[in-house]
Amino acid sequence: MSHGLESSSAPFGTVTGFLSRTSVVPLSVRSVFRFYTRSGELDLTALRIRGWVEDTLDAFLEDAYAAIEARVEQELDYESVTFSYETKLTMPVELTLGHLYRRAMADVHGDVNPVTGEVSTPISAYFPVETDDAAREERLRERASEQLEFVAHAERVARLCTEALLDGDMRDAINDDEYEDFQLDVDVTDAERRRVAEIAQECLRTRVEEQFSAFPAAVRERYTTAVDDSEAHQDDDQHFRELMVRATEGDDDATEQIRDEYKFAPFESNPDVLTAQERDWPYCKTQYERVGVIYDGMIEMFRAAGIDIDESFKHAIVLAIIGAQIWLDDVDDLEADLAEQQLTPVTAEYLICDTDDEAYQNVVDIATQYLDQAIRYAVDSDSILTGIATEYIYLSGTPENLDGYDA
Image 1 (cartoon, one colour):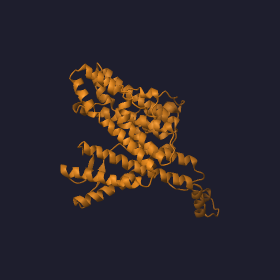
Image 2 (cartoon, rainbow, N blue to C red):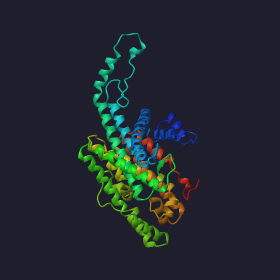
Image 3 (cartoon, rainbow, N blue to C red):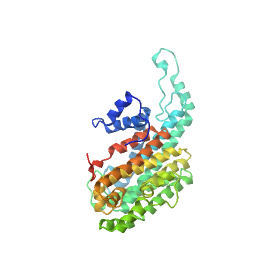
Image 4 (cartoon, rainbow, N blue to C red):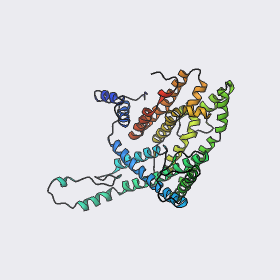
């Protein structure tokens, strides 16, 4: 995967390059080294921020799941249940919150960590000098009050986005009669699992509505617009399934339609988050409307709530998500999607191309194109965490499972 970025200088760059390719090194560590060798950017603070962000998101989910568990216990008369929901939707929220944490830390004055609220130990702790540490900490927190409030506000928006995304994903799963991601620690019948899913989604919907009321109306408008645009894309699903069936049966006209209407579909309106060159990339329109538009809308929710986020960061998030959808989900689900006549960039390539080798190489090139560009935008926006996460996406792929792979 070549990012077209300057590699770090030897000898450290040589060592990190080697470690980034060594399978015995954990994937998360390899991602850090790989990003460094591509960009020359190594910020260990990003790793600390990642831990704080993960703790924050875990707390959001624990709160939401606890509310769902209470509703399930009440309505289905269970004594005690543990609920969880399998989803990958929250990663862009984590990256956005991490980006904002990093900004607050860069802006703060003094020895206060605006993320944890901790005050650094003064030098007087190591020397016998009389000082009023409590008064000192209070003064420092007062000086850092703007950054502390910024973090608190960013976390409120992040909580809303997290629960809104979960609510939408659960609603889609219920509409598609897919309940396997709704997990309980007790045995339930299919009917009970369906009811648990409905309770979970209803509970989240109520929580999301309550949170929206604390924000300007524009926040809800940005979310509603993104959801409406995403659902409009789903209206084309049956048409694409029919094209796939015909193409599988050898209909050349259907194959050409897939190329024109799915792989190189033109945009009716041009989203600001994509350049003219990017809009011409394979599958850009269909995948932006499939997944990118939701996270475009998520960033706009932060902006509508009064939190400025630069355009390069939004570009990085949207393109990384499109790349992840193709490189992770669509590659992993190839066999199932073929069986279910589900058109994706991966199934499309195996229909369009003359050979498996060509299809394999196209899938690799297309996914890499999106991830490469996301890396460039991450560097432009000084979001090291997003760059590392994009490297992690790439390293997590399993292209060796595709037909046409040649070790």
